[in-house]
Length: 437
Image 1 (cartoon, rainbow, N blue to C red):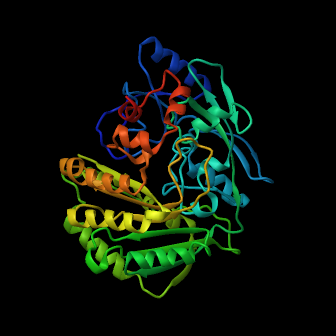
Image 2: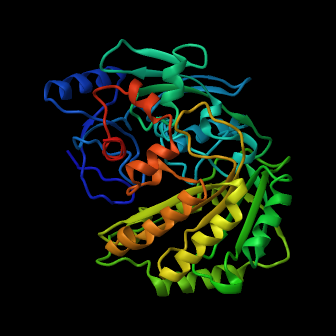
Image 3: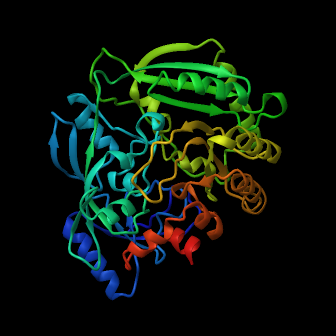
């Protein structure tokens, strides 16, 4: 059997998989590992960045083979699929029928089960909230009970604990999701450069109200008067045009280089070019949905560019009242460190509440960026960033985390005790072990 890693390749704790292709394989896998005295965890596409997708025992149930559609009502846009179905597979059947995912992260290769377990959010959080708001019901397999169907009205406590519950309350077997209607798969987008963080907040306050999807790239190395400069991108599905599934040409990072290709020089050069390429005058264009939603999907295995040590993503959300000062403080620390990456994202989140107990977004602003892993990152920069987030009343995203302290997690997510009470005793991740024990 091949060994599996997290997407960030840190921590480097390979996982031994038990393949699961049918629902009964889940129950058998749980029972087999229980007899061996091992806990486990579901592992789908392996796109969780840190250790939330890694089993404490390093033995996982590989659920990517549960990839079948169960039912679809194209009049109402309700689709039921197994947990291993990817968003790419869902879009391949829904787009030609005039439906799109209600919420999607920055990659279409995630599985439905993984997206629910992490309660993913996307560029339209200010309009649609997280994915958990659009899950009608789901099937759950536990080691201590018969198969369950959970929804807002049945097994409600487990339903809320499972959405964003990091795969700890049971193995998600299938789910029914409500899609959103579209008239075309083309995106009409507007791009505009901004010079300061204040300009970002001004643009966001205006354009977020006008557009369905909004996000900004930010130059994490800029300092002084240029602190917070970046490029604002907004878009909406066009009213007219074809309903076509995109098949973009894709490249592949073929090997892992001996050292990270992301360093101070390459980041500075890329950021300067990208920022100058955009204009202060809004640029409007219409094109395929794929490059707008999933730009990184055009390069397969792009995580290899960070070299053998891998990378860590730092994603936090700062509440509305302290967002401006908090984000500015974070950017000053990052710029002063000389670390960072060209993949820095800034966007606003709304107060649309998720049913999930451990859902990450809150009304405020979220910042996400990648860092090549190093001891300096862990022992110097991240503690300083954590202090800013803590003092601003913010929190980190468990799906992207590999360093959060138990204190910060428990203070930020007080409902963790309710999830722990409902946790399947056979399921335990390295993340949960780290932040609760």
